[in-house]
Image (cartoon, rainbow, N blue to C red; front, side, top):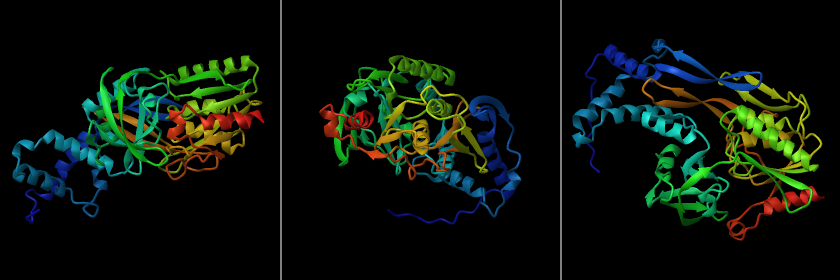
Length: 422
């Protein structure tokens, strides 16, 4: 490729450049209202507030950066790019914001324009949606299936936790694409097909899987008796419901159902659970731990730490419990599993978890767009920050291979039954 080098001089005074850049940032920062997370009594709640215009631009100096460079590049593109019809100011504007946000190299901190934000809201409202039923995320810079949801078309088709998505309907997934970009490509109406090329399994083999989209109903949890008499399993599929209060109510009812069986042996199955409400994980942990026990911590950007200790008398203090985890266990799942493991309250069985120990705030911007920004870290009782380098490592490691899946075997569950049966 031949490239002509041009020494381009700013065509505007520096003061004017700063003024235009200030207006550019002002558009981003002006907020009609913010759904912020506040911490009180160990619980998270929503608070609406307003943000003023950016007023401390003087904190930035030319020693930090020369803002005229941004407008120089903008003007060069507008005046000289070979395909004038391809110049889309709105796309350039939002692309610049997305680039600024992505420079943090945090896959959980993202900017969505108004259309994307509306789609996001529709996807996250309620229990029902149409698609393949899989939670997506990042690992080592690529988009992966964190976990196929229980009873979903994705799971029925053989999609495994940790699968790397290479192609969607024959088109490659680019490294510049966000999780949200890939989700938009995969989702669709009930009855339609999507073809995924995945690299998955213990040998990371490449295979093409055709999945028929369906309406997905996500159960938050269920109680069932296992094949071994007297041993029950609570399968927690997610830590979200219409609200935290609703989730806590479903959990409390499930615990009561278990107590009515008279059993003292329980498998807490967190496999494929992508997380949800932080406080839901705390609420569940309180069921098993003595009052006053440290469950988890949250740390903000200043290093301020909020401790979360057991505040009530649990119903399952005398129950022998084993926890199942896998690559799809993330966020609140890791908080719960880690709390029980660190307190020597439960043995953890399975494979290493996903590693997501952060919480995000969604900021509603003036034009309908949203900024999803990481605001706190989640720490285990010993101060360990849960992240891809610090995951939950099982006490007993047991894999579930593709061959196991195809043959209907579950060696992880079998191991849990063996441990509890002793």
